[in-house]
Length: 124
Image 1: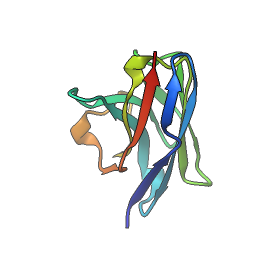
Image 2: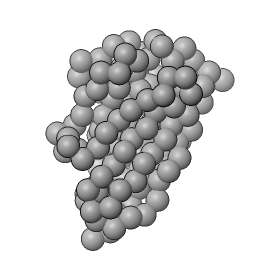
Image 3: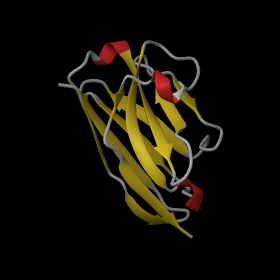
Image 4: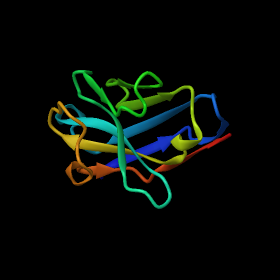
């Protein structure tokens, strides 16, 4: 059974930091890249960052220099360190898996597995 379980969300003031974690199980992790995708109320899904199994990364322009995606392959866990948070970063954040190696951020339909999501709220 495939599981992507997010943790670490919550509320923070603008300028603050949060660290999200995603524990993955039930699928061959080495065949998938892992990503964080967010959706704010009334908006479309937005891919935030992706990390390939070999640890190369890609970021959305909106978070470059502020967010860092990383992974611990021994623990099958992916992280998203979010610094200098802004109110516009408020959204439901999803952990997602996309098969293969990626040199761009996948489209929403290109993800194979999704977590349940976790809320991040940034107040001004």
